[in-house]
Amino acid sequence: MTTIKKLKWLLSLVLIFGGFTIYKLFEGLVHNPAYQEYEWIFKIISEFGLFVSVVVSVGYFHHWFIVAEEHKESEISLRETLSKYVDSILLNSVKRGFSGITNKEFDFSQIMQGLKPGDYVYWLITFDPRFKNKSRELENGIKNGVHFRMLILKADCRIGELRATETTGFNPHEFNEYSKLFKVTLEDVINRIGNKITGSLGVFVYDGLPCIPLFIIIRKESRKVEVYSSYYLTEPVSKMPYLHWETGLSFSEQTSFESECWNMAELFLDYFKTRWEMEKEKLYGAIGKEVAENKDFIFAPASAREKCIELFIE
Image (cartoon, rainbow, N blue to C red):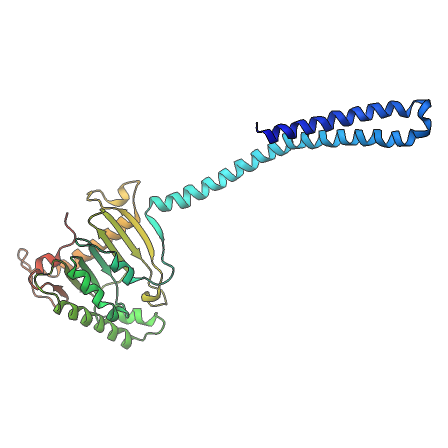
């Protein structure tokens, strides 16, 4: 018990017993004929002493018994509420890999600055109208030893037309032209990548469902996987915020949902791998693993075609 609490207890005892003592003392004087002249004053003092004694006693009884019980009930209620919120929302979010959300649109430049040689980046998107001004950053990343694997939407496909009709500020013709420009910009980057560059770029042009915008970073040095995911809504994806997910780099053969420790970042990574393999199969001929010519696959360096077809390998 602290000194302050001891003093409070002492003060309360003084008031209780002091008030009661005053009450009894002056109550006796009230009935003393010798002091009949001051009877009304003694009566007031006596009742005041009784009032102080009773009020302080009731106050402390309420504080130590009723309030204490109410406090315990409040603590239990608060603990249950926090447990429900923390366990089912916060801890579960962390367990599933959720790490935050971008303030607004995806900051491509900031992400590119954080990449290191040997890192892999998987990018699934329709197109990014801002990319023409960011292509040098992609080129520099490749030249610094980063490996990029991209899935971009094919121009003139039915999926692009449907996506354009639900996107604010685009019509099918504009959407198609941006898709062409996106690929042309990537081809310009490819033309500037020499054979001695340690990084690489592999790009499949798909005509299936875009499903979800994904930007996945496999950090080789720290053995982490970071995923940025968004949604195809009415706003162009270049203006949309992205959810941020993280997990450790794992090569387990176990399917994510087969474990209680399933993680959203792993599910996104598995999805990209599946989509990549689907496009990769289109490159192979009917016999063996002979790579067929396909305009829907572009890559750099020119001497590293087989390497650019493959995803991250430990």
